[in-house]
Amino acid sequence: MATLNTPALRIDDLVVRRGSALVVNGVSIEVPAGGSLGIVGESGCGKSSILRAVAGIDNQWSGCIQVAGRAIGARRTLADRRAMQMVFQDPLAALNPSHTIDEILREPLVVHGMDAHEARIGEALRTVALPATVRFRFPGQLSGGQRQRVCIARALLVQPQVLLLDEPTSALDVSVQAEVLNLLARLRREQYQAFVLVSHDLHVVAHMCDRVAFMVGGRFTDVLTRDQLRGASLHHPEAQRLLEAALTH
Image (tube, rainbow, N blue to C red; front, top):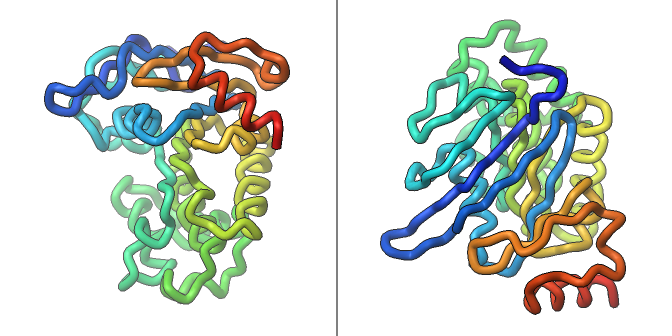
């Protein structure tokens, strides 16, 4: 049973395979309720594969995944899927172009058997600072930043324990990246929302997260708090290069 001290997410010895390739090799993490963890590494290191396993998109994994103290298996119930919601890298690809925003936001409420659709959709749009007028527009009529806000609103509608954020700003123009990051920071502050953020951009991760995990070749080489980053000596030269490059810009 979950208590106040129960982590929002706990992963022990997660292994993910793609055929004969070992993509994630024995990763363990813990995210407290209301906390945040950033996973940073170069493309192909396995960071997004962690999120896909946790979200239930990929079921070719072994190890232990717990959400709020409850073990989650490869086969997911609706309650399992509701507990962990993912926000993808490309908001345009993540939204059905033939559906209005109202239809997109209503769908998860129907799937999860939730009531008060009108009130919940209105509140979700207010939470992500979108005007009610976007409800009957199509994704192609919105800006990139607005589309990503819709994706975040959709994820929040079912009140997840953990938000899984896969490079949520990398497909956006620089001018709108900050507004999405500020929104996520506000949600965490105001709603005590736990999240895991993966990115190749250490600046983004360090700005958003309490702790940063450096990933190389399917493993975590170091897990540091934000305050420990400056001047740190990491265990793998590739992780060290990533840190030094960020500190010099």
